[in-house]
Length: 230
Image 1 (cartoon, rainbow, N blue to C red):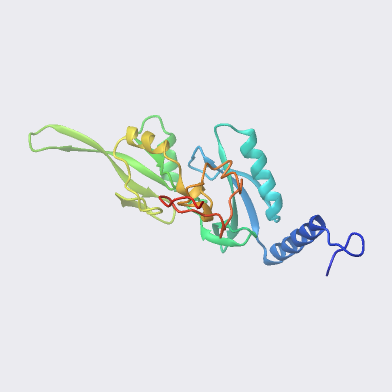
Image 2 (tube, rainbow, N blue to C red):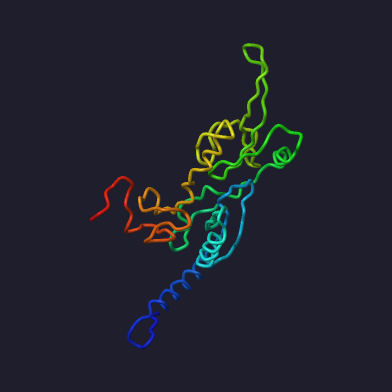
C-alpha cells in the first residue's frame, strides 16, 4: 500500500512510519520480546530495565537510559527460544548475546552473602557468574597455602572446576587486580555486530559520526589497519 501526501509525491516520513508499523505487527505476531538490559556495571542477576513488544520503542528507551546515566551502559536484546539475542537493524534475532538470565544455585548465593564464608561469586566480563571457594593445602615445604578455586555455580551446571569461562572461553583471572584491569577494557559484546573491527568505531553510546547507533552491513565499514579511501 502506497502512502501519498499530495497525490503525486511520497512522504519519506509517512513511509518510514508505515514500515515501522508493519515491523511491529510482524514482531508481535512472532511473539518477540525486546528487553532493555544494563550491560555495565555487571551484576550477578540480569538487570532488566524495560520490556516491550516494539523494537523501536525498546531502542528509544535504551537511548534515553544511556543518555541519562554516566556510569552505566544499556543495550537492547530480543528474547528468542528462551535465549537473549542481539537484534539486527530490523529487530530480528542475529547473534546470541553473551548476556543471559543466568540462574545461580541458591546454595552459592547463600555462601556469597554470608559474612562467615571465605568464598564469593564473581562475574566474568561476558556476564557469566562463577564461584570462587577458598582451598587450603600443605605444600612440599610443609607450609600451609591457600588459593581460590573457580567453580560453576548455576542451577544447570554447578560444582565443576573451571579455568576458562564456559560462556566466552576467556581465562578466569586468578587475582582480583587482574579483573580490575579487565574491567577497563571495553566489552566486545556491546559493540554493534556490524561495527566490530571497524576503525570508525568510537564508543557504545555514540558509535560513529555516520551511524550514531550502529548499522549491520554498513556500507562505510573500514577494517582496522586499512587506509581510508581518498
